[in-house]
Amino acid sequence: MENRLYSKRIVFATACLGMLLFGVSLITLGSVATPLREKFMLDEIGIAGMFSILPFGFLVGSLIFGPICDRFGYKLLLAISCILLFFGFEGIAFSTTSTILKASIFLFGTCGGAINGATNALVSDISSSEKGANLSLLGVFFGIGALGMPFFLGLLRNTYSFETILAAVGWFSLFVGIAILLVKFPSSKQVYGFPLSKMGVLIKDPFIILIAFYLFLQSSFEAIINNWTTTYLQDRIRVSQEKALFALTFFVLGMTLMRMLTGIFFRKMAPSKMILVSFVLILISILQLWFSQNYLITIIGLILLGAGLAGGFPIMLGLVGDNYSKISGTAFSLVLVVALTGNMLLNLLMGWVAHEFGIHHLLTVVLFEFVLMVILSVFIFKKNYSNKI
Image 1 (cartoon, rainbow, N blue to C red):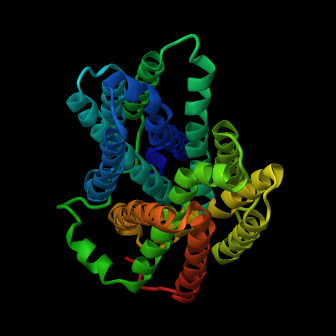
Image 2 (cartoon, rainbow, N blue to C red):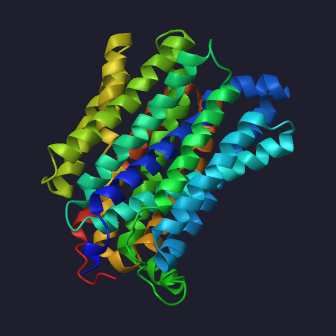
């Protein structure tokens, strides 16, 4: 009866718009770091402090979205997050003091984290089957946003200021928020009270904890590649910063294309088989990057690495949605908070490794993570839980 009250296609389309905005928000700060540094006369410490606010905001947004969505549904939180994201864009574009800039970045991160979690949980909820494939299609729009923002900034930089471009994207975010208010969404799953009591149950559940720590490694793996590959390539194969950045875009491209293929052609493939394909691609790419100093082969390796990592979040979040459908928002909050914690902690660890032992140990760190991910996946797929919450 409930399915007749809303259109799954329209709801999925609005979730895709939200994920596109998350992709844009995740990449925006790095894309405008140089002009912001010049505008506010920031040194290295100031820039580092500014960047540290964003993941903290993502963490807060990821923590709060789940219980709110389970209690009140997805519509209100997504609409408010997109509308507040508008103020984050405008604040970053037009702030005149560092205090306003920092507040805008925090708002930006919190709304982005909430949108990321809510759109994933929403797509999981409206997918009666093939959750991983639908989550992969959702992830394609993250890639479009992540690739599109630096592309348009570079394309239009000689015509418009970065402030004007950010402001325009902010208006698009406002439009998406208003559009969400006009769409019929699924009703909330918890009619009375917040499902916070379930969080304690989830924390004691070994199955979801295994998934959470798999995503801890997955998220940090992606972050390390995104944040340290350009430095690694400049040191390893002696390419310019421009060439290193160009090569890194192929990592995101590989991830986006693989999620598109998964969502369209590999929908029926079992999650365990899909994760095996992912591991094979990751291993081939690591070996390729390890033994080659050729620029073209490096690009191919990064494409394969992006393709290999593409399945991690959709597959694992699909398992969460299958096993915890009645409190999917709260369950997604738990695993995404753990994932973001891994993103921050292991990125700091990589910084220490690079400083103490050299940037060439980037592949040593990711190979170690890869081995742990394989081990965790064995336990995850052996643990066939029948007591779904």
